[in-house]
Length: 256
Image (tube, rainbow, N blue to C red; front, side):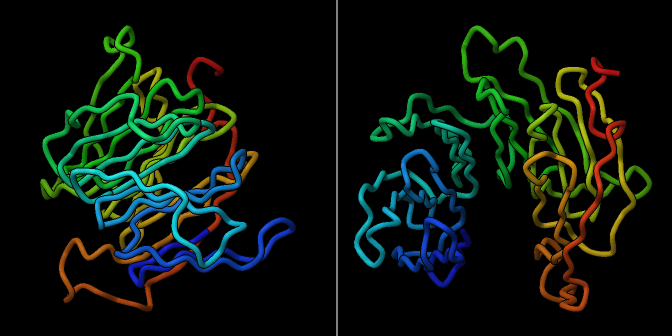
């Protein structure tokens, strides 16, 4: 599934889903497929979450949840969704009963949220901000002692601070990657609170990343994120790369 600021959601044909084209009322920031319900959920700048039935293309959303602010990032894993908004509030929804969030709180990070990603076990999530920080947040109140934040995507030689544009968790190991405006990506072990591996800097921002299903390949998109204004835009530098993941790069310290 893909979404864009032209208000449309598009899905490539597959065995079970034909080409889709929905039309929410405002630009869409995030879109996810809810596999066990055959629904698509979108988070939009119109301050809503909307749920769409893939068997009813062209019709209105089957459910709409109003939010106080625009959606900046969203992640879905199993029956859980986490939604980060422009006011720095984060809402957790149980997708089996998504009328109201099961939990809401304000991000501990003081600056704008760029990305949010759920742990594999849904016990918490990671938040990335424009201030080169990541916060590890647990959902259960009994686990709050495990919450912490750390700095990343910063240049110590120039004191420049870059946005964390993307976070994704490795499905096998539960370790994770951050990617930023500085053109770098790093693999991390949240339980050991350590960086596993840093990678060479690219000439442009990294805007999106993901692991394949078994975690053996890592895809990252080099694409300008407008963090330095329109004068720094270079379309020729927009590329997608594939990195074969080595076990010693992504395996947590406890498995070494």
